[in-house]
Length: 551
Ligand code: PEP
Ligand code: MG
Image (cartoon, rainbow, N blue to C red; front, side, top):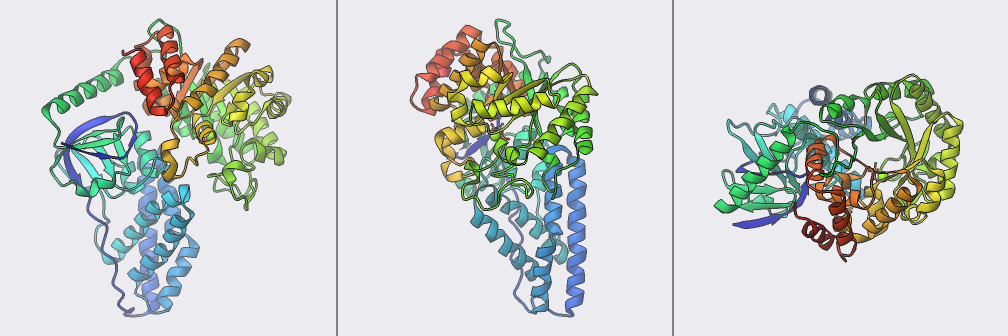
C-alpha cells in the first residue's frame, strides 16, 4: 500500500479501479494560416457558438450551482475581448486553432497571475479553449471516459462541464492533481455529494485499473489497499448509505435535544432539492446571485419576486436571508471600491452597504414585502459586521423597513469578542465559520498556500464560537452556524456543545450530520467541546473531541 495526499471534499469514502481521463488535446501547430482570414474567422464563429450552446444545454440539464458555472463558461466562449484578440491574430497570419489557443492562453496566464479565486477559474477557461479547438479540428472534446463498470476517475483537473454531468452510478470517486478547496471542481463535487480529493500532487502516478481507496475525510488516496482496509471502507460506505436512507427526522441529539438542520442556498431554484433532503428551513440564503453580472442593483420589484419564490418553498419554516455580501471575491461595480489592495479587509459586506444605503434599503424593503405576502418565518442578517455599533445600525434600519427578526453574521473576530453587547441589540447571530476562520488565522481563504490555516477546528476559532454560544444562551437568543464547519459531522456536534442552536449547510451534508448528532447527548457534546477547546492545534482538537466520546 502507498498513500497520496490531497484536499478531501465532503465526507465520502470509496474504493475501486482507476480510470484516467484523456489528456488534453495537443497544442495546435504554428503553421501559417491557409486560405482567407474571413473563412478562418467564420469557422471560429461557428465553433464558438456551438461550444456556448453546448455549455448552456449542459447547464440546463444539470441545474442548480452547476448551471451557473456552465453559463459563466458559455459567456467566456463569447467574450468580445477574447474574440477581438483571436481575430487580430488571424489577421496577422496565425491559423484559427492556434489563434484561439494563444488568445485564451494569454488570458489564462493573466488569471493565474491574479491568484486565488480568479486563478482557480483558469481551468474553466482552458476547458472552453479545448472545446473550441476540438470543434475546429473536428474531433470530440476531451471528457470523462466511458465505462460499463464503476470506476475512480483520475484527472489533471476536471472542467465544470464534466463535473456537473458526472454519472454518479459510474463514478465512485474523483481524484484530481490540480485544484484547491475553492476550485469549481471542489464546489460542484461538494454540491453533488461526490467523494473527491483535489490537489493530489502524485495523481499522475496512478494508472488505469489500479485499485485505490479514496478517503475524503482523511484526504488520502491509498493504492493497492489491504483486505482489512477494504473491509473497513465497505463498513463506512454501508454506514453512510444507512444514514442517507434513514427516515428523515428533525435534527436532534441522542437525548432528544433539538438542533434544527437548515440549508445553505444560493438561489430559489435550489429550495425543492433541500426540502427533499430534509432541510428544516434555510439558515443562509446568499443573495449575491441577484446582483452579480449586473451593472446596477436589481429593482425592488425584481428582488421581491425572487424572495417570494424562496419563501413560498418554506411555509411556516425559518428562512434566514443574508443582505448582499459584496466585496473581496465578489466585487460589484456599483458598490465596491476597485482599487483596494486587500479587499477582504476592505469595504465589503455591511461596510459597502453602509456606503450605499439606498441599495440596502431597497433590499430590506423587498424582503419585507415578500415576507408580508408569504407564510415563512423570515429572518434577515448582515454580513461582515464588526461590532455592536454596526449591529445596531443594521438592526434599527431593518426594523424601520418592516423586518421582524434582524441579526448579524459573526465573521469578524471583533464581533465575537463583543458578543454580550451584540446580543443586546441583535435578535440572533449566525456564525460564518469560513470568514471567521480566515480572519482569526489571518489566512486568505482563497489562497491554496495557506489552506492549512483555514481549519475551523482550530481552538482559537472554537473559543470565539464558545464566547458567542455563551452570550447567546445568557441572552436567550439563537446562535446559528452557517459556514462549512457545520457540514463536518463531528465538528457539528462540538459546535452544538459550544452553544450553537441551529446548523446550516449544503443540503448534501444533511444526512451525515443528522446521523452523527444522534450518536451523542448534549452532555457528551459539551464534554467533546471542552476537550477540543483545551487542545493547542486544529488536529489535536479534532482527536481530543473524538476521544472524549467515541460513538
Ligand atoms: C462564511 O463566511 O462562513 C459564510 C457562510 O459566508 P460566505 O462563505 O458566503 O462568505
Ligand atoms: Mg462569509
